[in-house]
Length: 114
Image 1 (cartoon, rainbow, N blue to C red):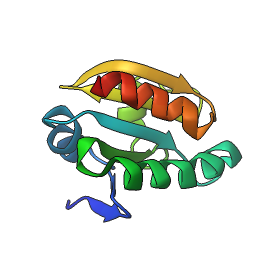
Image 2 (image 1 turned 120 degrees about the horizontal axis):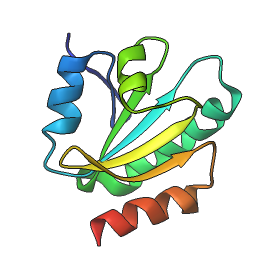
Image 3 (image 1 turned 120 degrees about the vertical axis):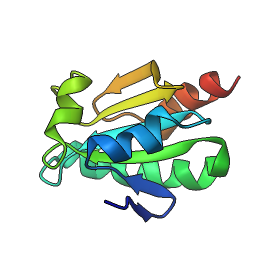
């Protein structure tokens, strides 16, 4: 399955694509675990799009719909959404559960790039 890329954000819904897009990425990966029905997720969505535009190729942005990729959500112990995880070389280096400000997410990303 070819991952869908919208506004610089790759949408991942299966383990194979996750392996290619996230685990094998040379750059840090900012992952947004979300669902259509989640109000706070809808608030975070535009912020993630802005961040993807701001960071360009320095950071990869991935969205995972937990309703479509339940096994990925389970693997990363995502019990509440939105959950935003920053990975480097497949390792979690930062995590935020719940909606937060753009500045908060920028802080996560900037620390990873430092």
